[in-house]
Length: 158
Length: 142
Image (cartoon, rainbow over the protein chains, first blue to last red):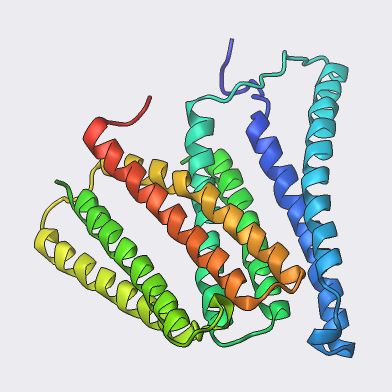
C-alpha cells in the first residue's frame, strides 16, 4: 500500500549523485585550496601540480565507489533497525534514465567549454600549468553541476 | 527535414571542411618549409579555421532559424534525438580531455597536445552528428 504518508526510500541513483557531488566538492576543493596556497608563495612554473591532481582524480573515483557501497549498506541497515526494511531496488527505471541524461548534459557543456578554452589558451601560448588547471577546474565545476542537476531533478521533478 | 536535422547536416559538412583545411594548411607548411610537423606555426591556422568554421556555422544556423522562426520548429522527438546524440560523442571528447591533461602533466610538446584535443573533440562532434543523422533516417534504437 502506498499513500502520501508512506516514506519512499531515496532512489539508488539519487544516493550516488549525493555521494558523487560531495566527494568531488571535497577532493577538487582540497586540490584548489592547495593550489591557491602554492600560488601565493611560488611561481606557477615551480609548482609540481601533476601528482596532486592525479591524486585528487584517483581519490574522487575511489571514494565515490567506496562511499556509494557504504551508503547503500548503511541506509539498508538503518531502515532495518527502524523496522522499515525494504528489499533494496538497484534497478534504474525510465525516470532514472531521463534524469541521468539531464545530468550528463551539464557535464557535456563543461566538456565543450573545457575543450574550446584549452585550445584558445594553447593558441596564446599559455603554459601547461594554466591549461591543465583550467581544464580540471571546468571539469570539476561541470561534475558539481551534474550532481546538482540530478539531485534537483530527483527532489523537484523533471 | 526538420530544423534540427538541417543544421546538424550543415554542421557536419562545415566541421569536416574545417578539420581538413586545418590539416592541409599544416602539412602544406611542413612540406614547403621542410620542418617537422611539431615545429610548424600552427597557431594561425588553428585560430582562423576555428573562427571561420564557427562563424560560418553561426551564420547558417541563423539563416535556417530565420526561415522557421514563426513555426513550432522543434518537437519532443527532436529534443530526444539531440539529447541521445550529445551523449554519444561525449565519451570520445571526454577521453581526449583526459589524455590532454596527462600530456600537459608530462610536459608533452604543445603541438601534439593541441592536436589530441582538437582531433578528439572533432571526432566527438562527428560521432554525435552521425548518430543524429542516423536517428533521423532510421529511428532511435529502443
